[in-house]
Amino acid sequence: MLFGATVALVACDRSPEPSGSRTQQQPPPVAAIPEPPAPAPAAPPGDFSVQNLSRGAALYVEHCLQCHGPEGQGHPDWRTPSDGEFVAAPPVNGTGNDWKRSRAELVAVIRNGAMRKGVPVMPAYAGRLSDQDIASILTWLQALWPPEIYERWLKANANGNTPRG
Image 1 (tube, rainbow, N blue to C red):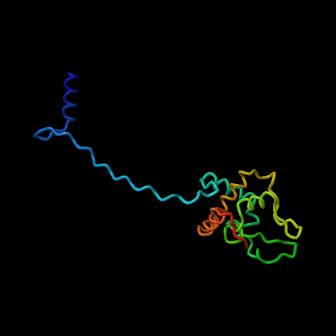
Image 2 (image 1 turned 60 degrees about the vertical axis):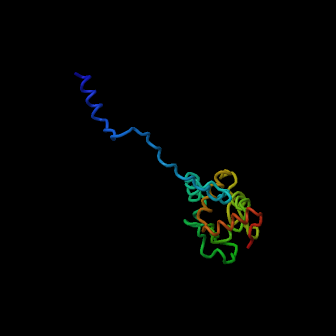
Image 3 (image 1 turned 90 degrees about the vertical axis):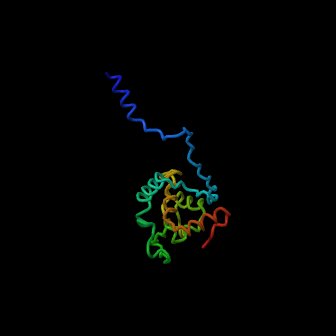
C-alpha cells in the first residue's frame, strides 16, 4: 500500500511532456562578458575599513576632541596669532593646513607634539599612542576631509610634492 502511494505522488509531481518529439533543452544564453573596470585610483595610504574608522574615531574622541573639536573643526581663532598663553587648535578636517602636510609629517606632529616659540602647543603622544593608533586617527581625520582636498593630498603625496602654506 505504501508503495502505491509513493508511486502516485511521484507520478503526480511530473509535468506532462509536450506532445511531439523529444528535444533537448537549450541552455539559457550566456550573458556578454562586461568590459573590465577602469583602473582604480592609487590606493589611499589609510585603511578605510569600518573597523579602522571606528577605532580612529574612538581614539580621536579620547585624545583630540577637546582641542580640535567634535568634527575636527578646530578653534574659531586658530589663525589669530597667540600671545603665548593660549594657542587655538587648528582644524584637522581638511579645512585648515593639515592636508598640506605629508603623512610622515602628520604622524610626526602627533607623535612628537608641536611647539611654537619654544612653548608646547600640542602634547606629544609618543608612548601613549602606538603607531597603529596614530595611523587610525589619521585615517579618521582624512575621512573627514572634503573629497577634492583628499584627492589633491593623494596626488601631491604620490609625486612627493606636498603643498605648503
